[in-house]
Length: 323
Image 1 (cartoon, rainbow, N blue to C red):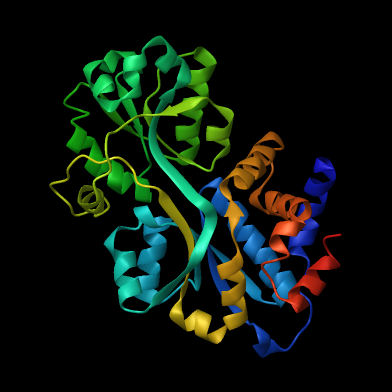
Image 2: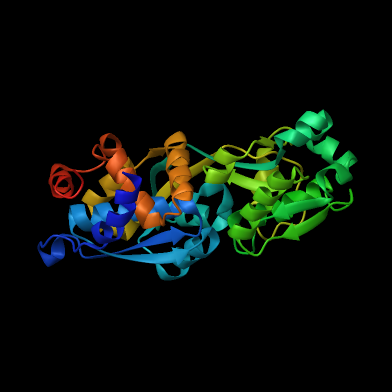
């Protein structure tokens, strides 16, 4: 079944949308963030909008901060999906306050997990490493290195602010800024292969967290004011805070949802449980599948989930493709 889905995916996703009046949907732009779950979400939405609603969809490769900046400066793209609100900084809040963008709801439920992690085998050997203070007191036990996000990622902003707040470098731990998400994930895989130390940032839902026994580091209590400051790229004085639960939402420009209320309703309903996404990402990784292929796997496997998101016409259009 998995091989058949992969073989069919490109054809199904690329199939032309059904013919309908030109003004019934028209051109739509949607972000595709540069991580796996976001690629799945975008391609699921793309497939449903094109094949169910007859839209002409353009996918815009992006990331959290650039996507929000683009909406602020250009009013585009129309749809920003898998937006991790905690990593958006102040620009996103300002767009909502000004009524330029609307948050339609959670696309991942109950949300995402931001955390600093270490391997479970390190905690078993050295229980004191379960807390950030234990790590700071024993930097050699975690390899003397913190694995940070790449430049341009939303998590890079709050990590760059929180790391000094905890005195990580002062404790003798090098901050290693990865050049891509791929090298960050590879560093985890390499550590587990060698049973070696590892300390750094990662998030869920991801295939990585599902595959490896990583333990969240106890960073103490959550401080709302401190974390709000940590999300601002211009902050200079940030206090200690753990990570709060991470809302992961779909946001659209106000103009778009007013012009396309039927798509707004669909996108507001489009919610995938975190555990379900972990399973899809695991399948994606095991089969070396693309985001398009994983989207078709989701649509074929979880029809009872997505069929409740859409209106009757779209459901009828899609049922002919996904039997």
